[in-house]
Length: 224
Image (cartoon, rainbow, N blue to C red; front, side, top):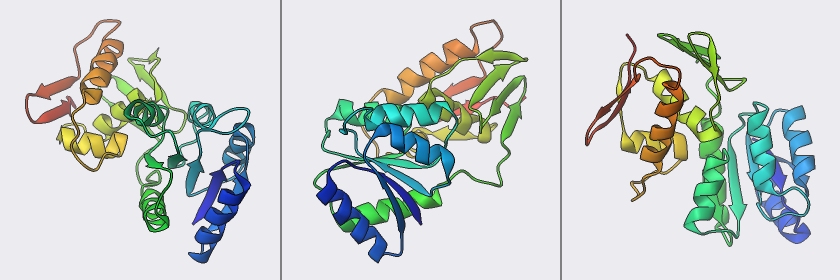
């Protein structure tokens, strides 16, 4: 497993690197968000491990920039910023997981292994078309009947998941796990708020709503 580590604490960076190398991982280290963007966009990695609090461009801005240019490498924030809003902000920026400092080395390794298995599926097409909707999964572009639609990172991930499962009902738990990496039910309206904004953008220029709600069950992207 090849990992890019963004961490500006030298001692912690050495400790994490040593721990991962003992588990047969290859680790590339950097201290700034600018360097992280350069490395992550220049080479292929299995997982990105970013601290949020680094000098210069922070980890959050760096990950947003990477997602904006189409880098889809699974990413986890490893940080002391542990509030609920911090975690939500990190996930909405495009992170796949979030782990608080101090952390268990075994848990970090287990999460990295899980994320590496969730790398973009090479068997799934890069361009997905359902009805008059189309998404480019590599460029993160959305269009309806040829007209482009601007969406945020998490809105794209939500739409991508719905379209890849078009015609099937996906439950709230399935969405939380696949889009936000929550492996348990939480009391939040994060799905509802993102779904509302996504629907508004998809229907902004007219046309029917392609997302059907099954109250108490989940959602289905219309495939007809």
